[in-house]
Image 1 (cartoon, helix red, strand yellow):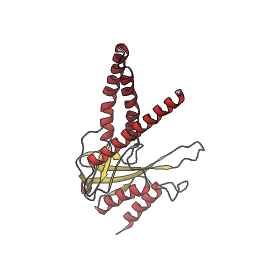
Image 2: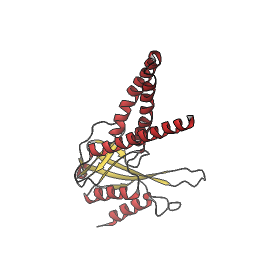
Image 3: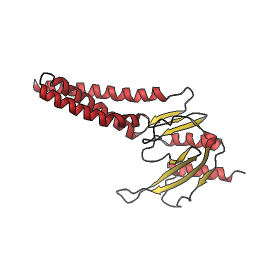
Image 4: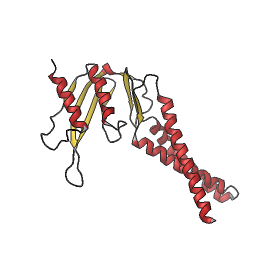
Length: 219
């Protein structure tokens, strides 16, 4: 019977955690979506924070409920819950506001440490796109090359859209952003050419570099 009770509790915890996690992600999508959006996504860090919050919240609430008839234990559980909430609440707010929104008219990118910079910046207000790369190491010693997709705009500091907490996950998503920038006549600079060897021709960095090179060769 004890095993059955534990399995039921774990199942309930999984349902509550999953439900809260999905609710937070859905609320973020609803809050920031616009009618003609091309892309709206948050980051791995934000989704991880949402999950941690969704996992711990029912645990703390269950402890309060379990200790409701024991004053000392209830007080201790309440203090722990208060500390948890005071620490996690601002972090969840920052995670909630960490997203990238692209539309036919412009782009909004809120980093994890920014807050309420929600105005859509027109594509034409981007001053420059700089392409560069960094060498990535691997256990085999045959590391690849990671694209640096650095956007300079009038209203904010340069930012690499392919940073390790980027809300862009797939090659196609970068190509959408690249095509939007290129179609509005934004200058595209290649900081340095790719090495002639060791670059996967099907990789993101190779494909973006190739597009930029073709653009430079156009009359």
